[in-house]
Image (tube, rainbow, N blue to C red; front, side):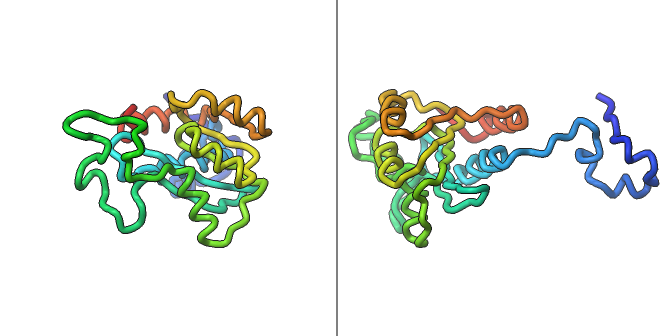
Length: 193
């Protein structure tokens, strides 16, 4: 596909154009939104997860400023699941929702990181890789977060949708044309459902 250069480039010498970022001088270039960048940010952060089943990441933001970020995984100093195996696998059987998981979800870690650093998150927004679960939703409400964007659905805890609605927290599935290809490539590489 041939790139069409912006009109202003016709008066710029070719040797100067070659030094510029090619995507930005193409007439089809669209600057990503702040939320697009947040989505990429938490997808990248989620790679830090030690969980063998989910790569979770979250960011809290307000007025186009990042206040805190976090990812899912075991407590500081605890063993990592990829090193010793999942604690929910007992005698060869996966015990889901058993309470045996050694990790904390990204939403809880991002809230904890804000508290640890003395950051006020009341009235802020959150973006997560996965739609929050019931336990995380309760803490999101308690901390005064007013809207939650999520990139991928988490097929458990459908009651979260009604819970947020009843308590005045907007729950928004985030979609972006800018991220479409990025998310597709990311899913193939890093997310396993």
